[in-house]
Image (cartoon, rainbow, N blue to C red; front, side, top):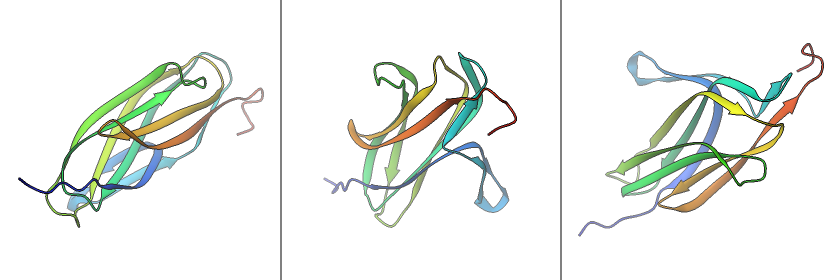
Length: 135
């Protein structure tokens, strides 16, 4: 039986887009922590979430979900498998979310789970702006 070591979450990045470049490099476009809208419900056309895991060994399930401000409704979620053969290997889990509807303004929550254990919760502030020139 192979020893299993739970990995650590090194970082979570919220951005507009992620691209795989020649040579294996990843390009990250449009980092943000707030979404601005002039009316609600608001639709955000593209949102990418990057989670990097390391210092683990074995197979795991990662779940990333976006919750409503009251944490009662799951707005969007994605799950993926992580396979780490050696503890020094890094795994980047990238999820792309298209046309997410935000019904109201407020602090939404991005939650990251590893095998059903909550690892991190990050606020995503969705803000009503009255003057579209300000943001």
